[in-house]
Image (tube, rainbow, N blue to C red; front, side):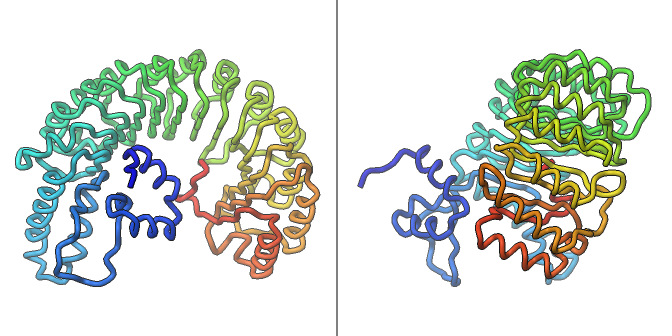
Length: 440
């Protein structure tokens, strides 16, 4: 039998990720293809046919401890913690002994020393993704900085304690591409930011928790950014933020702004400089702040958008028409509903009557967590109108709201949705809450 290269097999299994029937058939063909995991339905004392641990690519220190605590929860309280620690050490020893090359490591608020695992050096050498918090021991970061030099993605959550060694870890990376900083404390990140600015090859930067004491101008140094996500906290004196309006990111394709604290004139200047290549633009504010001037700027400076999230008031329907008309490549639009923004019926009517030939997905975001008031006859009228939409495309309808307040809480609405699913009018229908909103 011809043996396919490992890279080829990985691509095949990634494509079949949600097809459990086909994956199961793959396992029956060749035990070397079990990288996606295997479930042993009945307990057995026989050893496995091969070493499953060698196929592990992702390790979460927290999950190991959490699962062990659940397993040992019926033991006496005084012994549970010690037993959990002992078992965890054995599991880590097993993994570091057997894993050829770990790809992802997660460690939040927990300490682990690689000194007691000599094999960890080889196991972690090709680590590509790291997710950790700043309050882990400095030794953890120093050890990783000596071992790992090719991490592509780092997610750092900053707590009140910032251990030494983080700057060394960041500086040691030769080709860092994706960086996420989560910072909701008043701790100064000057040294961290200094080490980050050396990586001008960054493709993606996410910075959550920007306040007036954050040195925002450093963002302008990353001229190779393709994706930029900035989330601000409620604060004052954001003078430093004004620098961002002059930044030029010629490769920027995805922009996500949350709780922008200043006038939208600065943001408008930014998209005037960078909107031409944008394919996704999300703007959001916890307090429902919105400005029609920003929406008008989107129609003017962002002609190549595929996805958009923004709010419209009832007196801004002409602007929404302009967006559908001027953004001819738009595929998905997320419209805020409730309060001062459009209600569901108006949003759906505008979508079905004015969306262009490429648009097929509408996301209704119930901004004020309001109960759906859409009547079944209004919902069915929308689906009937979509059937006549040119060109005909199956529709995706996504609702972001609490389950008990969404339109599918009405049984008649559910029946209508199922009816048009069977007719092929609806390709995808989903209700998600605010915490699990995958579209912003």
